[in-house]
Length: 423
Image (cartoon, rainbow, N blue to C red; front, side):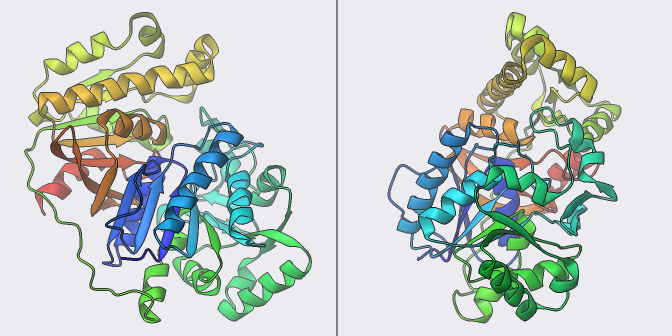
């Protein structure tokens, strides 16, 4: 089957978020972990490639994105989507704008849009400023993100240092007038040499209008929600069929483990709520890991009853994270935790865990790589943008969910397992 839309995501939780929202349409979605080494076969109308390049050096991020683009072209895709976080996680060097510009050059595109809005999860853009709930991005908990602290809420200012082309805005007043006005605004900006266009959106209806106006762009960029209207648009014009089968939901043993590396405010609340229920939990200390490795965590995990869904977590308050980073360095502190949680994932699988919840983008990347997962089938959503996925690891069928740090409610961990029980 020819791929209609080829998608590239900058981390693994973002990829499952995007795949889950596309799968709401009922159209088959395939999620590949990393750029496939084989030529495209058994492709789906929507192909998503999950990379781990959010904080990689710019040159490496661009190189990986181009490899993914080449594979998607081979799969037959003629339209492409570059997915990044709805909180626009990046540094002044990139990688959101730099990768977008690299993809544009390869595709011969002279303009694209940027719309990380996700109203269903409290992310909105007004006059180019990104809000998390009612707070400007720079006043939200994202200001203390351990890898990409966001200290400015204005997307144009954030984007400008990352690109060589001009940056512009289509504001909410224009968006509300509909697709034809949006197209006219894009054309006007193009005539001024503006290649990178931020689009305001505060509600799902805004996303629908933007998607309709921009659906034929060679490249769209944004959070997952701006891609959500695309399947219906393609079905309406006959570009693809709506009768593709959904992913089957296997019956798996209720042997479970939760691995949490995110230090977001919501994941902190989810960990606290889970522990308050009296659930078994082991806290990873980066300084202890640097000294003695993962042995204590692995020993603890080996003694756990996996039907009780033990939790291994490095989730901590911002001040604790900063203290560890000051001692170890930002990169080393993160890498130590990722390695430990990846080790725990492999051991849990070998102990018999068949349902694995992972919280945090960097952690999800480390865990999926450790499990040797190369492709995921998308299953039911636990929370907006967070689906269960099904895959094989070391010959064993498992259910895996990869949760972005800020997604879900406080009861997410319990909700995740309940979702599998009712299907």
